[in-house]
Amino acid sequence: MNAKNISIKSVESIFVILLKIKQMIIYDSAKHVYYEYLLMITPSYGTAKSMIEIKQIFSNDFGCRFAANLHPHITMVNFIQPFTAEPKVFQWFKNHASYVNAIHVDLKDFGKFDSHTIYVKINDHKEIVELVNNIRRNFAAKLNVANLKPIFVSHPHLTIARGMTSDQFNIAWNAWEKKTYNESFTATNMVLIKRPYDIFKGVSIGNYKKVSEFDFEGKNIYGRQTSMLIS
Image 1: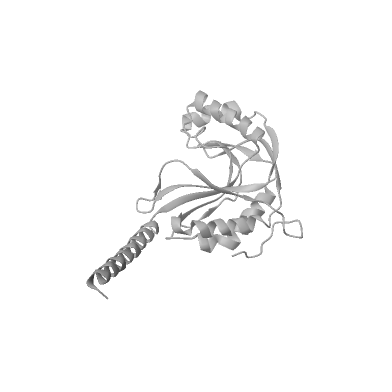
Image 2: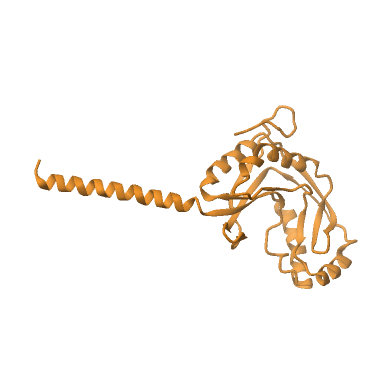
């Protein structure tokens, strides 16, 4: 074996080592990239359109800057995860959704939280609460990362405007408290969205982007949401 062959093999070996080091650095860096996730149900096109019109009124007439910035939705779970965990989280929710039946959702009139949020009420949110509770039982421990516990919504609703000042809230609530709203839709999936999260500062950054949709396939034989463990 001549020196030239040895030299070529040495260079190839060094290249392989450097490539592995680069991959390790990239993976290690990815472990420190976190995202804030929302698992939610979104209304049908017609229902969403009517709600967007109302949200735009709140933005234009009452100056609510957090009214028109996000598509109408029903939040079920809010959690933080490292980017490297996303494929696993995706599989968890995909499997779980396959055991869930489609959910009929009736929306009726308006409600409020303290003096900062106005929302559309869900007439009977028992099935959504049951779904959230099943997700909590199956995944609460798995979604708990870096002492940042996931938030499971106990009072499902569709927000019209949030983060309102007292003056904005009082004027808007006086105008909309007695207004009626009646819409319904059938939820056939749940949607996961995300935005960057600064784990060191404890703040979210930028806008949400959709990760995926998980179809409700109704595989469970009893016609109810399943509480079985799905890993």
